[in-house]
Length: 305
Length: 269
Image (cartoon, rainbow over all chains, first blue to last red; front, top):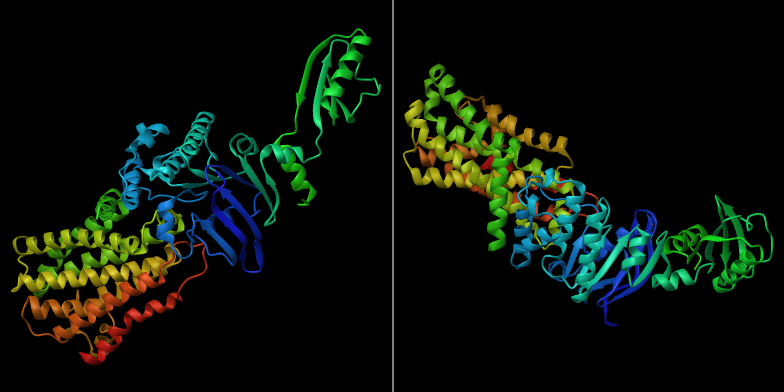
């Protein structure tokens, strides 16, 4: 599990005078799902495209399973599977032909079972230009994993997918992980990253500003837990009674909302206060900070680690 | 080999499925053939002597110069080559297989033209069919390579049309197809030496029909073949996977090197 399969060291990518990625380093370990997060223009796609051998880096080194993308692109294609953010297939190529075509170039038998698995069975004889956006994304994913690559790179894999397709994709990712594949996932979808990734790196303006498991990242934020309370007589709304460990209080619709550094202490105090005022609890919600909130916190801070 | 078969089969089917390619590969050349056979020969009976090779060259030109480059440019612009690259499809296959399948379509049409010319239009048939075949293959290879090279260097559909027409139109007018080189003024004939069709026609007339030629047919075939090899080598060298990737191995104007044999040819023939 600790074996490094993707290594990126001091990687830099420039477009003219603009530095898109500025000396970043990270490693992805065998069998993990690693999320690369960041706002638009953060450098995610540039990083992945250099790792895939589509673009040339301007500094540093990248490798997947020890293969340098710029030196051995054919060998690299055999060990990685890639779903690009923007790519295409010939307009007249059917889904089935695409599967046969790429499997033939990878030297493996055609994996039409993947078309069925990803809900493309009925569209297998449909030409690419007649597929919907979601169907195109699913086909791209099927093609990316058809040759059983050890490393799978997915760039915004759920963009344009409906809820059912998204769930199927997550299930497939989990299955591939269980089979030993390593997945490098670039996404805007924080809920997806939080659900799927073992570790994530947050990229901002070409630099990595945070790395860790989603739980670790959310824990290193402000650390406040959101507690929302609704009671029959709303006695908490106008009351400024000191509730311990609370940094901030707000009222929204019928809820009193507390941001607490010690949710256990705060909840106990709130319940005691309601009991003392003979009010009746209707709803109580305790929510730990999400990765999305932590992401927004980091990106708003301007990239301070 | 399996990959080659799948790739070739797909490209060949695309030549039939895509309406534009269907037009370029079959409808336009055969329609033009019917028109020239039915209208031109009654007006100018002498044209029957060269109807078959002239229309074969037109068919090859339409498929390779007007049909082949566009899809290559569109594929690069649409990111299709990126998908190919990450799946291990080599650049050589990306260029050579569409060119081969286009040539294959052109050869099917050429066969129809050659076999139907005599019965339908009383056109002169080649005195040497083997020579006719190898000159047709050589012509198709050269134009296929030029078409692939245009597909590599053209930056969009407009420049594709510009480059293709820059060769196609003069070839139709002064390339020895509609008007024999012997009837052209001396000054225009020199310009004709810059066009591949002039050499192809001279090779046909000299070798396949055994008639007197203006250019030496052997040198004509050599010039044609050398240009084809140069054009294909330059297409591979200048090939770019990705229009967004500005790093390329050479300036597109290097493509003009493929015309060097014709410049030399003017002095040799």
